[in-house]
Image 1 (cartoon, rainbow, N blue to C red):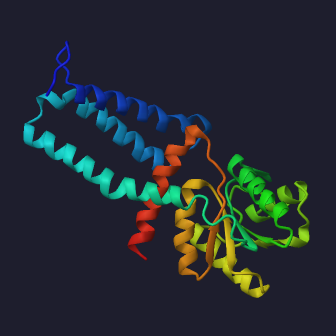
Image 2 (tube, rainbow, N blue to C red; image 1 turned 30 degrees about the vertical axis):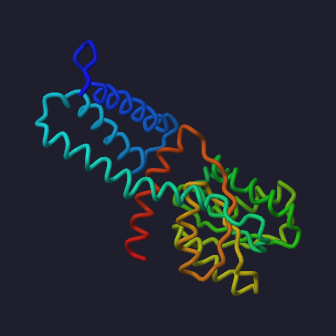
Image 3 (cartoon, helix red, strand yellow; image 1 turned 90 degrees about the vertical axis):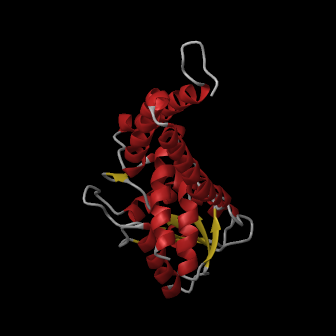
Length: 250
C-alpha cells in the first residue's frame, strides 16, 4: 500500500478525512435540536472510520481486509440500492394526472408548521393550482407537544396560500407513515376520491411512501419537497433504517 511522507497510506488518509467530514455533517443538525437514529448511527459510524483510519496500519492484515470488505458489502448491497430507489421515486409520474394529493404530516411547533411541513404544503399548493380538479388529503395527527393536529396546521397553511378549503380533507388520527397512508385511503374511499394519488413529502421519504401505497392498493405518484443540505444525510440515514424494516416485514 502506497505510503505518504509521514507514514500514512492513501487509504488511511481517506478514511480519516471522510470520517471527519461525515461526522461534521451528522453533527450539524444538533445545532437545531435534531437528534434521531440517523445522526446517532451516522456519528458512531463516522467516528469508527476515523479510528479505523488512525490505527489501520497496526491492525492484522486479515482483520483490516475483513473490515474493508464488510463496509464495501454494506455500501453495495444496502446503501446503493436503497439510495437509488429513494432518488428514483422522489418525483415519480408527476405529469400523469393524479387527482388526489396526499400530504404527509411533519412536526408542528405549537400551532406553527416546521420548515419541512411548510415546504410540503407549498409543493402541494403548486400542484393544486396547476390541477384545479385535484383535491388533497392532509394526513397527520396531533403530537403531545403540538397545540393542533398536523392536518389542521396544513389546512391553515394551504388556505393562506389560496387553496379553497372545500378541496381539503383532513385525516387527524395518524401517528406514522403507515397510518398516514392507510388512514388517507379510508378518507379517499369514504369521499369517493380518486385512488390515483400524488404523495407530497420529502425526497428521502417517497420510496417508503410508495411501498406503503402499493400495500394499500393506491396508484402512486410523487412530487417531493427538498430537504435542507445540513439535515439531508441525517434523515436519509434514518430513512434507510425504516426502509429496511418496511422491506423485511413486507
